[in-house]
Length: 487
Image (cartoon, rainbow, N blue to C red; front, side, top):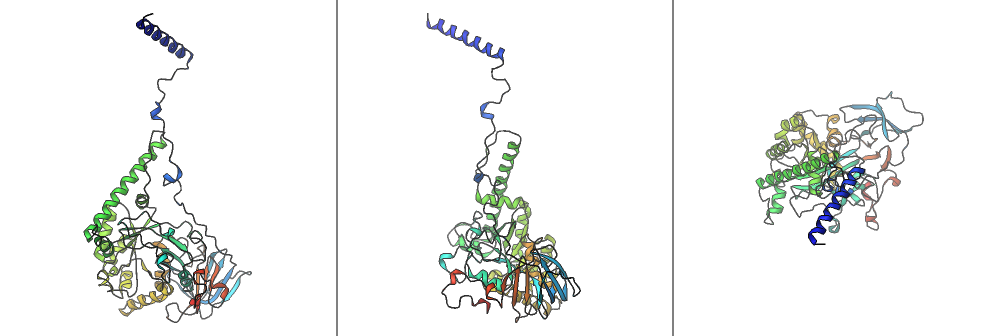
């Protein structure tokens, strides 16, 4: 048989076989998707940013508490009320009722005599570096600033947080029940913040505020251009700063679009390859989706206005400007845009961008309708935020504003809670909210008043007169003066 004849016979046999398969229905249907069109497998959990958005979940659990009623004290609710001879009842870790002297007290409540004392919500420090810059300063634990690239949105402050920082205990003795821990301000994008409950804990997760949204730290002004300009890199100017933000948001928008396209195709059963996960762009895309809050270090009014325009250009919103020394020049704009600002009472002139700060800064912007916050950015001041608020209030009242204590207490309680996205849970004495409460020895706006007892979710976490509620950090064991914070 010749080769040509063998080929012809083979072709005939193949055709007959295919015909038989078609007859029995076992051949490949004409409309079956080609192998190359089979939908791709979803990415492994760690490669999909939506699979486990809180990869380091809170394990915080409230400490044991009992029903407690404090009566006879002056109560500042942080909702605009000052109640003389008031009553605050806590039960099940929540505020049960707040009212006047005739407020009913449950029969099983422990009753605390608050005569001559004052009650406020727990203090909230919305700008803290405790845990990432422990106090006293230890270089080996100086973990608050990843100053290696202008955009380090990929780092998370919680991964630097050291729960044994003695500063947490000292802040608690100053009435601080919640803090926002931020990475430092060397970069255009410094990384994610984390909100923590101020309780003794072995782990960061044991302090992490359940369900609190993340923030991203942005910085405008002198810091980024100084740090990177000094290294011969961009940014080295204010315009370099803004260009850096805009380039980052363009990348973030493109990244978000790729994930959106991938998910849309996957839902339709179409072939789709997941984009490569990028931790930097995860954070920025989270901002564009409204899931992550922007905490923007910015001193000057003109720079705040530029940052607002950048936010409008890319479709996100700024939650709060930090350090805002010139908020008094931009109060109406901040009020219009519903952006909070945080500042100190009298830190001004220590650098060029704070040169035009004034003592009445917070009060003037407050009177313009802006959401006013007093923050610390300092391991010592965080213990005395009540006094810092008093200074800011007094500066405003010296020029005739007549700001009351009932108003000003919100600067260190309800307003920072709003700026951290947790106002539905804490920051004011409202039934149903977490029972974060401070009993002060006197008017909290007096230099001579001290936090006597601090409740967190209704549990006593600090008592100035009871050593059982004065935790000490292992970091200070054997150190002269350890634990002296409560004296």
